[in-house]
Amino acid sequence: MLGIIAFFIGASVGSFLNVAADRVPDGRSLIRPKSYCESCERSLAYIDMVPVLSYLWLRGKCRNCKAKIPLRVAVVEAATGALFLSVYLLYGFGLDFVVVSACLALLVVVSMTDLERGLILDVMVFPAIVLLLFMAPFWTEIGFPRGFLGDETLIASFANSTLSGLGAFLAFLIVAMINPAGMGGGDVKFAAVLGLMVGFPGILISLWISVIGGGLIAITLILTGKKNRKDTIPFGPFMAIGTAAVLIAGPDIIHWYQDLATAVSGT
Image (cartoon, rainbow, N blue to C red; front, side, top):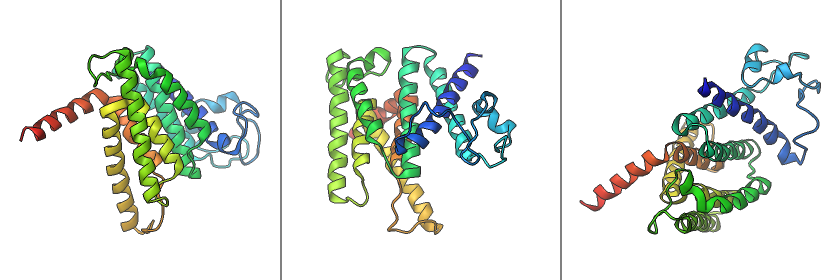
């Protein structure tokens, strides 16, 4: 039962993220007007805004004008619900559920704006940096050890997060300076957010997953003729996927990484 609640909390957040991805890039209010059909511009009834279920009931069409509702609406709601459910199954309900779920919500909305608009917005990134800097000393307290400098203290947690954020920012900045066509300023700032979010060695694992995933998708698109070598592919979603993997399965991935590093160094 609690798992169902976690899913629908996430799906409801996903519904809000759909609105944010549509309105924030255009500078529109998130509150007014209330949700409406983009085709007939009629306000949606509350029964038409039940996450995931309304899309299924309406068969993907507006109740009034029968225009198609973008599939993205249901996909984002379902995906965000699944992410929140995963967090609940791992950590239960508590502070860690709130913090990790909020981080995942940010990753989802940034991915959406980057995919659809080619934008990673300062209005999303800068507040996240401020909040994550505030959170930096306390990651250990919610079950994410950051004590690579010694004991798992507040100072060590803060140092890990801030140095990881700074390191990721500088690494991406160098790449952007070398290849400005392939790396945008939004990616550079987003990298700082991710470093603050997952710390070290989480940021290395996140970027490894991002590069592998992005490379495989790029090769597939080129081989199928959907993209050519000169086309750019948004990297933000891949960065988000790698970071989400670390947030959800972080301890297991980090232990695997540490065991692998130990095995390699011992050979």
